[in-house]
Image (cartoon, rainbow, N blue to C red; front, side, top):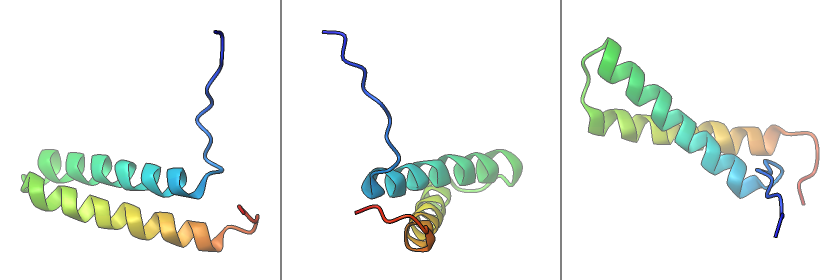
Length: 66
């Protein structure tokens, strides 16, 4: 009953997903609050930024995940 579930970033899929979500949140917040931008384009840009950075970090990481 007292199982502890850990948020494990060693899983590559979870790592890339976390980067995508973080990219969406950061870029959307910056564009909407600072630059009066459109929310839809901000979400698309943030998602692409997070996906690109997540995949890049996945391939550049020195430790083998598999």
